[in-house]
Image (cartoon, rainbow, N blue to C red; front, top):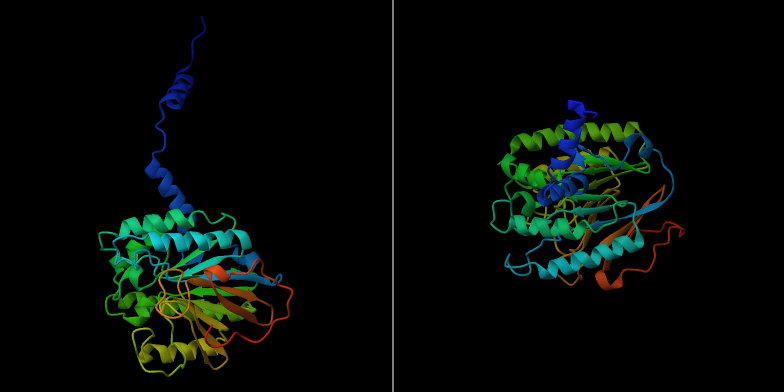
Length: 329
């Protein structure tokens, strides 16, 4: 009778008795693979070396304020989930180059009892985005608190990756900032200092690489309509806004995209556009729940906000680039 070697017996035993991955492990793997691609201050879905070269016009979607739980003061999130699922259907149908969600992914903050349930629903809904369409998440004040701390930022990062990072797409440099530390840095001054030093280097690198455009994404608008408007809840304080605007102008940043306002707003700082986009979730003005379509041409960009029921059947990239949209959009 032939005998098995100990190595073969071990292989058989481990094959038969190896524990299966738990449902929790599978969920964690999906979260890491889909929602935590922002790591080491870049975004893994994009190859920077290849994407630094202009290829052809493309479009992306900018969403903001999914804010699961806002309609019911955190008692439930059925309305937000339904709107998010409607947005996902539009994403999969129109197939943008990427999708970016500019903050307040949940209404509850990390220390709130309902935070985990809202995060889980966000993950469930946006995991339905086609895997070939990168999904970029940006932190907002509800994601890390009105006065963020290293602990609250770490809680966010466990679910969504880095709080600030950059990535290239088709010759365009995209910079994502943590605007909550710009709004109130008292709880994490070291984060703001590190982000500022990092931003300066990113802008230098983008100019050196001859980026066709530099676009900046964050949650809070730098301003709503005028770059020197007084401080208020929905903008960045002038003490930090003014030097940042000067820095962005010197770097020829093309546009800043934000949310937070739960309606649309528009302004200019020199030639740089400040584009504030209405919510996927609960509106606070006349603009319906929806998202923005941004078309990127080699020389300029176009953008338009659409309510969920008014999204076009297709996006035409062959149209000549025109002037930017009206202020109210």
